Image 1 (cartoon, rainbow, N blue to C red):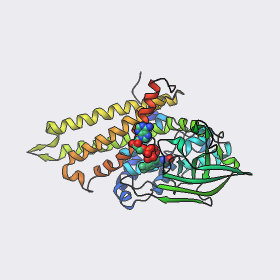
Image 2 (cartoon, rainbow, N blue to C red; image 1 turned 180 degrees about the vertical axis):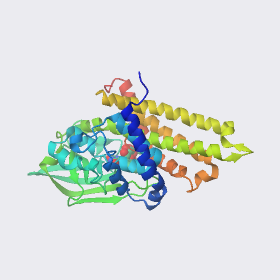
Image 3 (tube, protein in one colour; image 1 turned 180 degrees about the horizontal axis):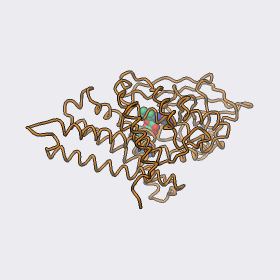
Image 4 (spheres, helix red, strand yellow; image 1 turned 60 degrees about the horizontal axis):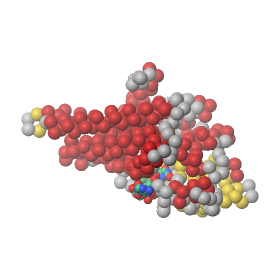
Length: 383
Ligand SMILES: Cc1cc2nc3c(=O)[nH]c(=O)nc-3n(C[C@H](O)[C@H](O)[C@H](O)COP(=O)(O)OP(=O)(O)OC[C@H]3O[C@@H](n4cnc5c(N)ncnc54)[C@H](O)[C@@H]3O)c2cc1C
């Protein structure tokens, strides 16, 4: 058993940290306030090979692994919760093409994302259903050589700024059970009938989160991703890794808030001594430290298993569940350590606190993660 990153991974972590402290950290508040996607920063990160690092080199990736990508996600969000996650999530539409896409789809679309040509999206959630994926109503119907898509998707990250969106839609409305009637499609965001309407949020303000309306969007037959009516199963594969990524991002948020709180506790004085000399503050920092170290073990074990070719859905869910809940607890206590200043815009922790909140909601809620873990324990999902 070895808990250390290897030499290449240590060098990667140093390089990402240097980039993130220079190109991300100073701009957090600015992008939060202007609520604009940090396209320039995404492009700079892509140039250095930090976007979609696990994509094979022949598709402009760095050919690294899931552990490496988790290191990048963690470091991005340590530097800034909003920008870090916004640029890292440029790859949301990548895994479905990487694992199930045709050669043309990989070359002409997926390969653009790590190159910095634009982010990508995946659209599963709808206005009336999120957790209950099989209840989706968006339809895709074959008309000659084209698929025609109709429906509305909700809360789609990169739905507007992305170059393409992987859309999950019903192709067999009579399928029983209903999840057997879902397929995945590659939809270019400049197709006629595709419209993205930005949604205003409490945090992650520089993320583009949009309602995506598909009104008779016509795409070529070849834009089906993988096999018709296998979309739900393809999605489960997507979640194995995407949940590790979200977990790693929120681990980074927890680390960023903890480090800022620790520093402040050493500088700020109350009753004639630094805050950190008060045991009540020490206990908060001790709890933050303990939760962060635990989250790290879960995230990197889940990522290690993916790299080993043995992805474990329950562990990926546990990692995402624990890291996202840790980020909420740690950012809450970080604000407390800062006192009144924690509530002011002068310090980063108020933004970290707002941004952490979505971690237990997107990419499957905490309840959904517990369902996956529980069903695995009950023997209904293979671990
Ligand atoms: C900022 C942001 C970005 C997002 N990005 C994307 C994206 O890029 N693509 C995308 O497709 N979606 C995205 N989402 C949507 C997100 O994945 C969903 O919001 C989430 O899956 C929950 O779905 P819902 O909002 O419909 O809640 P619901 O499914 O209506 O759930 C409401 C509550 O009920 C609970 N619940 C539901 N079913 C059960 C059950 N069986 N047992 C116990 N509790 C249950 C849920 O856990 C939740 O607490 C994003 C959301 C946000 C806020």
